Image (cartoon, rainbow, N blue to C red; front, side, top):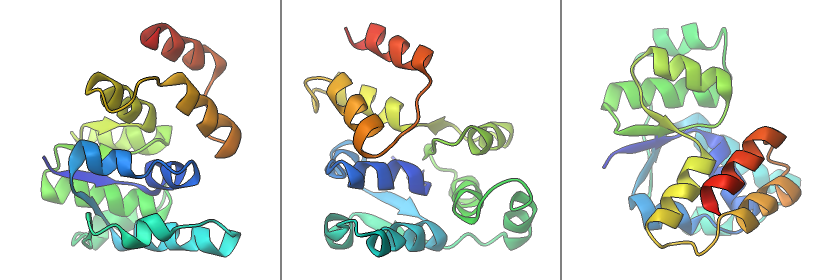
Length: 160
């Protein structure tokens, strides 16, 4: 399975110490150079990124269609633009992305996307997590991951 990721799913899992969930689910994650640099920048804010730095299961690949990247930069940040173009070029099984605008553009380009909550639900379904809600709460409180209250209640309903 080929999975490309934007910064947000990776950085949020780093912030709560659960980055290994991605390895357990997907074995390898491909990221563009800008996503890599955005993750490294977390260290400047005092975050411990050692788990990421030691993870050999991330593969950094640049997108080749720079014209498309530049067009997407009119609407998205660099990490999102590069991740979407890379996912398209590699015909990724899906793109890990949380930002609504990026998700919508990826969808318009025929790219299947999954957000961090989807990753947690998949991990629970594969018995890699006993409970989802404590992790969702940790994301909201520690990583300041924004979730609409109605979506939060929907997740609670899905996970019991």
